[in-house]
Structures are given as C-alpha cells and as structure tokens.
Length: 112
Image 1 (cartoon, rainbow, N blue to C red):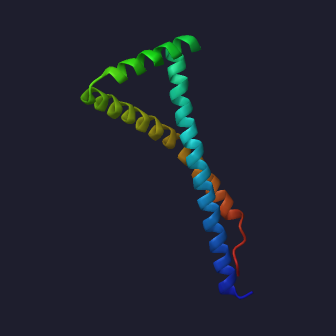
Image 2 (cartoon, one colour; image 1 turned 180 degrees about the vertical axis):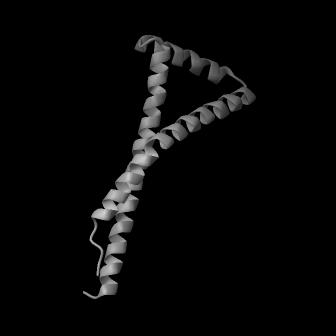
Image 3 (cartoon, rainbow, N blue to C red; image 1 turned 90 degrees about the horizontal axis):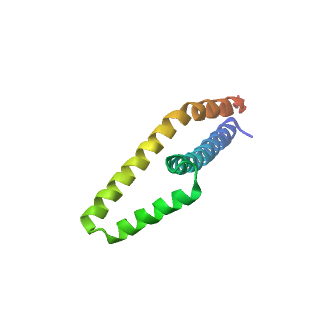
C-alpha cells in the first residue's frame, strides 16, 4: 500500500471515528437533557408521580383552552427553557468529549 493510500485510509478512519463519537455524544446529550427536565418536574412535585401527572393534566387542559397568542408565549418559553438546559448539559459534557476524541485519535497509527 502506498503512503498516500495509507494516509487516506487513516484520514477516513479518523473521520468516521469523529463522526461516530459526535453522533453518540449528541444523542446522549439530548437524552440527558430530557431526563433533567423530567427530574426537575418530579422534584417539583415532591417525588410523587400522581401529583406530577395531575399537574401535567392541568397544564394540558389550560394549554388546550388557551388562545393562540398565549400558546405561542408558552411554546416560546418552553423552547427557551429546553435550550437553556441543553446548553448547560453541553457545557458540562464538552470537555470530556474533547478528551475522548483526542485520546481515540492519538491511539490510531499514523502512516509513515
């Protein structure tokens, strides 16, 4: 195998590794963010699932009976809250991702 072909294979392998790591990390980050929202809601209900679901039912009834402007405000606020939680989770998880990608790339064998 020529040096150019070996370099190309290593570049392709590294690219696939980084793409796979980013995909897995993104999925895990999304799941952690959703779990954080659930944990906050459960903590706000005092850890009682029945209270949590009664609050969710109350929220859904009010949402469905609200006018379009009020729904829009609620949706914007909920999306902003979720974006904030995702941002915090990303900030906490990024250093570990960078370290894992660097460690994985340094284990690869460089041609030549």
